Image 1 (cartoon, rainbow, N blue to C red):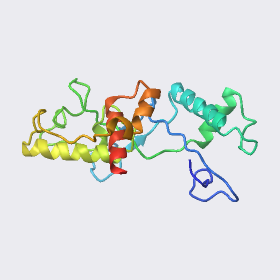
Image 2: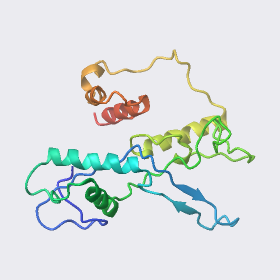
Image 3: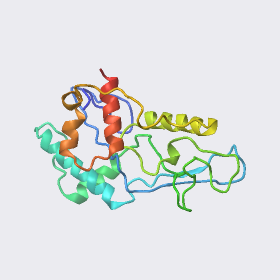
Image 4: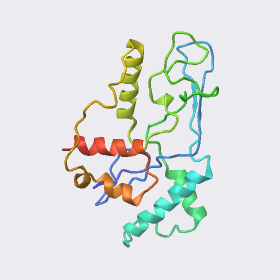
Amino acid sequence: MLPLAFQHDSFDPHPGPSFQIHMTLLRAESRGRVALVSANPVQLPSVVFNYLQDPRDIMVLREAIRLTREIVAQPAFQGRDVQADDAIDAWLRDHVATAYHPAGTCRMGNDAASVVDPDLKVRGVDGLRIADASIMPLEVSANLNASTIMIGEKAADLILGRALAPQSAPFWTNPNWKTAQRWNAIYALNKKTDPLDRFFMLQYEWQGR
C-alpha cells in the first residue's frame, strides 16, 4: 500500500488525499514470446507479452480486487459500483500494467525443448552461454534482481570451473530464526509457498536487520 496514488498509466500523483494498493500477479499463466526478425544483430527483436491471454490470470486478479475491497470496505473506495465479473474483467484489461519483470524466454532444462542446458550453454550453438533472467524455468515470486545476480555469479563459477563448498561446510544460522522471521507467518497461511520463495523471504528479512 502506498500513502499516495498515481494516475493510471503514469507517475503523476492523483490530486487530493489518496492511497493506492498494488496487486501483483506473481505466477502468471499467460505466455509471450521473443523472436528474431532478421539476421542483423543490432535490429531489435519482436517481443510479445500476451498479458492476460490465459483466463486464469484474469480470475486471480479479479479475486485480488474482491479481497482488496474486503480489506478497504470504505465508502470512499473508488469503483465499488463495478461488481459483476465481466465488469471487473473489463476494468482489469483497461488498467493492468507491467511490473517490468519478464523472464523465462530461454528456459534452462534437461529436455530437448529447453534453450540452455544446466551449464547455461545454448543448445546447438558452440561457445555461447546465457546468464540472465531469461533462463528461469519459472519466475520467482520476488524481484528478479537478486536471483539474476545469483545466475550471473553461478555462470562465472561454471566458466572458471569453481564448485560449491561441500554440503557439510559450516554456515551461520540466526539463533532466533523460529520467531524473528515474518515468513513463518506467511508460510503458515500459504502451504504452497515453494522453497525458493522462502529463501528470498529470508534474504529480505536478513538484509533488513
